[in-house]
Amino acid sequence: MKIYIFVDIEGISGVSNRKYISMDEGRPDLVALARKYMAEDTNACIEGCFRGGASEVIVRDGHGGSSNMTREQIDPRADFIDGMTPGIRFADMDGADGLILLGYHAMAGTAGAILEHTYSSVEIQNVWLNGRKAGEVGIDAAIAAEHQVPVILVSGDDKVCAEAEDWIPGVVTCEVKKGFSSFGARMPSLEKTRQLITRKAEEAVRKVKQIPCIRLEYPVKYRVELVERRQPNPWAERIDGRTYEVETNSVEQTLLGKV
Image (cartoon, rainbow, N blue to C red; front, side, top):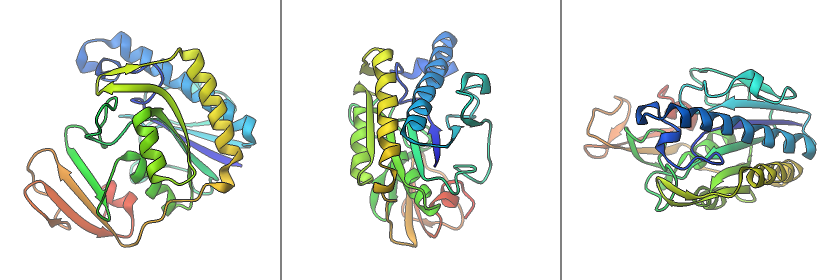
């Protein structure tokens, strides 16, 4: 059984504000700590996958420039994809039995959610799929479905877990912290959250055949509202000064700006 783990950083155990994720905040020590936590959450997830019956696990560093973890930090039983993979969101995912979205965050504008945004906090205000507002969980679940791979587990704060349950029937969620604001959280001990991640990953892998891919009507109406006025891509229909929409047969390629 092949399981693919895509790892973001905002929803990782112990991460509560921008000082942990951005060098611009002047705390490189906290950024280094968050990256360490990222690897430790990932290894806890890998352990659960193998306990649940996985025979192959692939880990993809999915935050920023995808250079937050190193090969030596990751459990040697898993393969590790590092660096950029232009033109594809989930490189080498085809044929996987399930996708895990580890360390995720809620969509832009979610009240009380830690570090909420949708792909880019400086460019994107909102995204809709067929008229329904979507964050990275829903959009990535749609992309995975285009590859016939279900999202089986989402970890992060309480808000992203609720968002995942709303988008993905039967998904297993793993709440590692409770958000109070974009920059504040209540967090259990790292020992407790790592144990929880392992347990939830094992549960998700054991349930993999019971969790379906999400379904969207195609072509998908993919609408984006930008943070600032700018010229949208020429193939898109302008809705207003900051919003454009396109009908697409590939959410993935539209997200990546290829169609």
